[in-house]
Image (cartoon, rainbow over all chains, first blue to last red):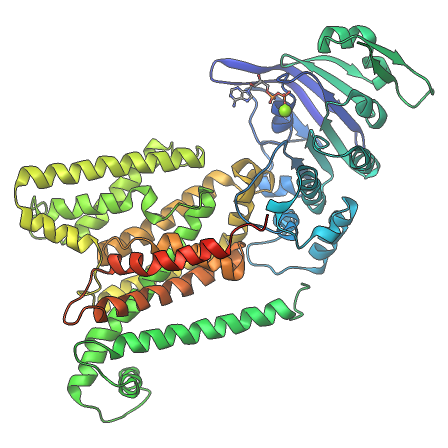
Length: 253
Length: 345
Ligand SMILES: Nc1ncnc2c1ncn2[C@@H]1O[C@H](COP(=O)(O)OP(=O)(O)O)[C@@H](O)[C@H]1O
Ligand SMILES: [Mg+2]
């Protein structure tokens, strides 16, 4: 499914947070969203997922405007992994991942074999099957994040939006999760901070600055030394060692 | 757990249901048997059987009348009131994502007392309005204020709780104002005593009303149980799971308000049941609402009927306000749950 955002404007009160943002993601593509803190990555993801309405502009998924599709129908196709999700309730890992089946179940229907298969597969993919009976409260930060990704996978989505999904993960699981998202038959938009990981796993990269798109294109086109200096205020060397494998960034002191 | 195949947890659940249903029936029977004039349990069952036309036993008319006309309706009202309040507590704790939430956080008991005082002390309605009607109106007025203050329940949960606190303060102030300026302390005392809760005056029509309101509330809540689960990680997360958050919140708040206002206007603002029972139920059946809500209803019913029994036997020849008993019985019980449920860190 394709994801298209055209000229989005969004703000709170008199404050404008996103201004004239347009992006386009082709079916099956993985788009990396990078930018400094507060540049509007999370806000943009919320608009894309239809959780907030833009003041102007239009988000369409597979040609349909997200604010017009009924919530339940939308969430059968679109999953959203929040930047930080927490609860005080003592739920088990299995309970949390089962929530992912909510859009596929009617109010009183039982738990189907299909539901069970989706949950088990999702837990296996994030390497958390062995923790399924554990209380969510007792998980480490990275484990919680993996459980939330599993929940999104259990939704059996065609489109996935992930807000800094690799934040608390060890390097092995960062790479595993990103590889999995890339290799799944999904269209995905991932907000990321690690530019090298973005270069490795994303087909395209959009660089945000102060609520607008600063640059977009393939990792090699976008991640240049000038851009890093201008947007992220760091000096770095960018090398394309192996052609086709994306640029490699080495930050210099 | 796969669909249709009973496993260990399903068997355990069936067993729990059976045991708790039996416990409730037993509690209701005991509540019907005891009192100033104690009646044997066998007689109680026969009298109930006679009343339902199932048995045709010869019983002393006085005993039959005490069971059927006075005590059974009272015990059944207690059961339904307990079920309703516990249910409301579970709903609000889930919607507001706050373990301290209970039916009265929406300002409903404060509103009910203002309404009651208006009718009794100020004589609003000139005798045509009963205390109950006044309390019901007051409870709904308070709920309206909360809904307005919290922006039609579309804003965040903390906002709603703060609005409830503000509404409670407002209505408590109104009550105090009316009581102090009208100068009839005796009437005010009556209203206050009534608010602490009593099943003394309830009869069959009260039961019939609750028999409509509480099971309907339960049905709506069960129908929305999946949506309630989705609120575990907050409103936005629920929306991402396909739940129409605004509509569900409003519907559930309205159901809670109707149930609470009906119960409060009938038997007073009985505290603690709505707070403590959901926690106890979660401890037994876990946090997911498809199981939690029925469990709350049945545990709430048992708890309230038991509290009513205690309120009648603890001091000879006297009935303690039920709200006092629910707190006295509830707190140690609650302490035990808190102690046992400490996170294993
Ligand atoms: N509800 C809100 N009210 C006011 N400001 C907000 C709100 N949401 C986001 N912002 C502001 O908008 C900017 C972009 O936020 P966000 O999208 O979370 O950035 P990012 O995810 O890129 O770090 C930040 O400056 C943030 O403070
Ligand atoms: Mg962010």
